[in-house]
Image (tube, rainbow, N blue to C red; front, top):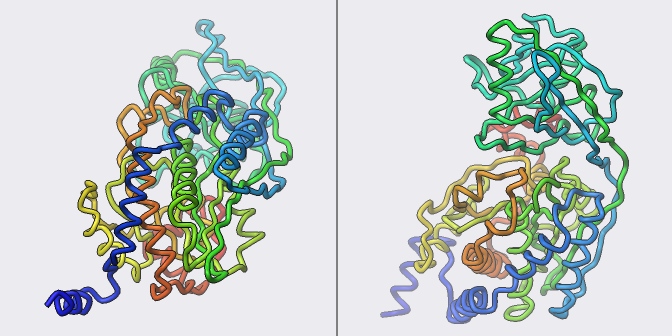
Length: 468
């Protein structure tokens, strides 16, 4: 009767996973070790406290890489560095100073790829949400443009890179972007997705000081600021870190997380936790289940924050290799479910897996919604099935994204353990199920999938669209 029930269940769910005894034993071992022997929390603390923020190309990034490699070697793992050159950026002593109607040095930071510019003073004008039509309707020539946190009344909010290009084309001197988070926060970000120097300086300023400037302009005051930009662009040499666990076949599943961060805080949430989870998954597979059908390749990508450079360079070097799937961990908190990322054929498998993980609160279940701007994207653009967890982060973890407050004290060890256990189980099942629909999409099919989920517009605006 037990065999008949199993057979009937298999018929009902098709290719949905029915875990055998060896699977469940390994699942239990993964879960137990992820909590009892968790190494990721300690390793992440070392990286955050001994190295700090990991802006790609910086000494802090290199020190953090050395710590990661040292900790992997302690596990008996032989990581390799895959070096590459990319457009880098160095933060300098930049200043935004209000000089009229009063004097105040503002809390402001330059955006990535803003280049060194001679100090200048200019009047300020309100560009509102920064839409092209708005900038066309006002005189911004020779002026500094304030871009507020307001939502456009019509149409889409332009990207920062678009606003800077619009403003530069109309001979503006600089752009100030007002943040949308309270508490005097400045949020790091990039002015370009392709690594070219910004044509004019772009700065991030606090919500509170931005509203102050808005009020002055609304009262008709003449507002003037002085801007000094000493940040600069340069080519940098950096590395991805790669660990490979050979399988029965050369076809491989890539697991990745971006290792770099912005330099304001410690990059603990973005993306220290993703890097730490990846470390823990490597440890679990090395110690519990090193032999699998597919080869497993674990990659700590560098340069994500400045434009996905590490994953792009990885795909340049390895894109023609037999990569059957990719799992990405970016700001992965407490797992709440799985994302099939637009690859419909994997939804039944993920639903079957979710239904067996009854000890975890996977309340979001399985969604099927691809997204952009993380290291899965170069894989997705090549039609490779890719997956991520849906996950919960606490308010204080999310609130300090890209800011000085992204520090280790906000990391939760229990979230790391849960995520590492779930990712390990997902990887175990994917890596031992050659019957799943791993075939890459064609270029035409990939374009259709991206259009289906309305990602073509953002990819075109970011100059990432490579399809007709």
